[in-house]
Length: 459
Image 1 (cartoon, helix red, strand yellow):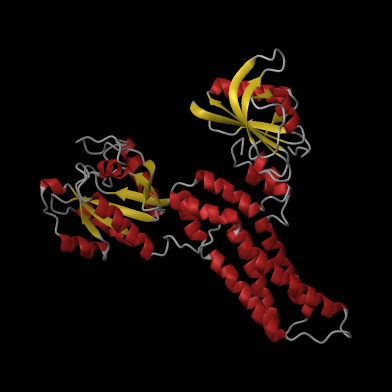
Image 2 (cartoon, rainbow, N blue to C red; image 1 turned 180 degrees about the vertical axis):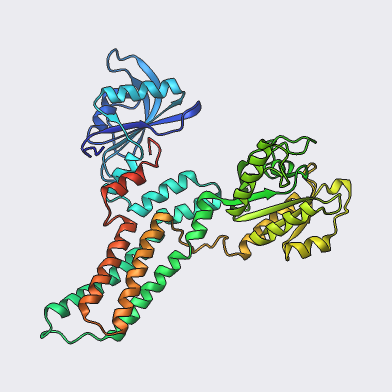
């Protein structure tokens, strides 16, 4: 439901649970008045903008003290939302925070909706839509490298490129429309410089589109499936990578019946590790479901860790696992090196078609760091690794940019065939609209609401 932006909103801005500090955030024209009503400063009654104040929060009904707090008032427009904004820094107990929020609401604020603070920042021109989405990426970043990309997006890297291309196309459109409206007063347009500008814009969009896969990896993690026949140590390897006992490990084959999933930060790369049921002919319906699930995970994997019991000679099941990994890309781990080495490295390398092979002992941690380094090298070779100049786009950006690129392709065809200028203007307008949707200059309320509904309350 749409809300009037002149309402004052409030929410707890820190996660639920017990912590040292909790924050209640208030935004809107009543924010300063609410603070004056609830807060007694230790340094007098004056409330200056962007100054941290120390004092007591009191219940306005009985003036009883509720908590010893810090508070900060930020006068519009120099605030996160572009409105008058107050943040109250309480002790981080759930009961205290709920009491403070209830007092704020009783003074005239209403509960904020999901993402409403950032939505107001967008509506008030503090950030564009792509930057607002970067806020969510930063909150959810699985690794420091992922957070770095989100910060660059928040700085406006993507917006800057899109604005530049869009401004150029708007200039071209204005020139074309002037030539159409005043053919006798302006010289006829040459198609050669038009084509040059169109191609330059298309190349910039192509560069952004190429980062779509990298963006997905850094937001969601590289889907990494651990596969192997039962009892080769897949769950032990997951625990070794996580450095904690996450998966159940026993000597009984087939313990893992369903996929377990955990995120692992390896040199800044987020690997979404999926431990699967062993690949073999199932012995019962439950195991059959697990094997089927493994096949599904394997078919959609970005990366595969094929695990083989290196203390034994390769079985036919081992060979099939290695071949499957070779088709997806990844590494081969010859586990149980503490029990000796009987698997033939040369045969493993032939079956894996050149995938890196590592001898490890998941149980004792031997070779795990070398395995992790190898995983990173493979990803970097495949072009999914970090690039300091990269601009990462999400699925929504990709769809908008793809439409803009398609429109430019049509415009280039029209210019190459020297078709009437009206034909070019139609395609240019389509490209301009699509680019405007990336940054939110031209976007529907439905899209805006969908984006901010993904945020948590308080952000």
